[in-house]
Amino acid sequence: MLSFSPKSVSKELLNELPERSKKVIIDRFGLTPKGESRTLDAIGQEYGITRERIRQIENHGLSSVRDSEAYEAQLTALEDLKKALQALGGVLAEETLLRHLAKNDNEQNHIVFLLTVGHHFDKAKEDNDFKTRWHIDESLAEQVENALTALYESLEPNRLTPHEEFIEVFSKFLKQEGVKNRSPEVMERWLLISKRIGKNPLGEWGRLDSPHVRIKNTRDFAYLTLKRHGSPMHFTEVAEGIEKLFGRETHPATTHNELIKDGRFVLVGRGLYALKEWGYEPGVVRDVIRGILHREGPLSREDIVDRVKRERYVKDATIAVNLQNSMFTRLPDGRYTLAK
Image (cartoon, rainbow, N blue to C red; front, side, top):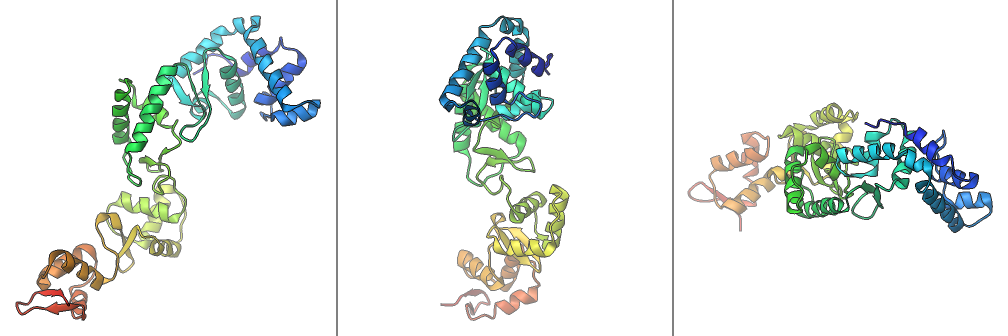
């Protein structure tokens, strides 16, 4: 996307600096073949001066670069960098911008240096809500951040939203801030500015603190596998699904143990699990019968069998046996109710 070599431009910009200022900036930004940046303290110890003095040398060096003839000579390259940032959205998280513009890790440091020294660009430091980001339009940056905040506050804690739908919702909040007609690609880059919104491996968006978005363990992978499948699965199928969807090898026995421990899953048959959010109630068959009778009142055996089989993969005879439990009473008309 860039028509110039960031390394060559940064080298030209630094050529006119005094040796110490030049070395401090090179060390601070990691403009070396190894690409390792150094702290103010480390550089200060090398020179036997305070970290604050190193900061002063760095800032003076950057100001000197901006006032130099070399800077004027490289304005075309900086304008090209500005156009690239504009084409990507005008405001981007630093990591997103570098991923699009840099050919390798080492080149990333040179681009950050050019962004820092160029008068075209403004940097906003990382905070609790947003990642480190760069922009060329203060008003647009504020509008995008306001829309991201409103979007986050509208999200239910554990809800997942498919990508296209989520982009549409974000678009509405952007329009409320006066930002219209942006491509889905640009809006997705803006979403990546937020530290509180994220996308899971299946491309679904939600709050980043949700276990359905920030995947940590087998249970979370199992949840996404079942959700994608849309109906109950045997634990061996869940293990196979995790490997197929995410490339993560998982032993069936381990998967079974994790499903048992997590309240998001309900055992609905011999080794079969469903998601509780689908309406399945936890517990054994008699617990399911009790819940049905509590909600609906007295029912015939046929109705009870029908309703239980919506929640459990069991035989009619198993349900009939459980109806003999002392917690249930058969009425004179043949219906069953909860014992008093």
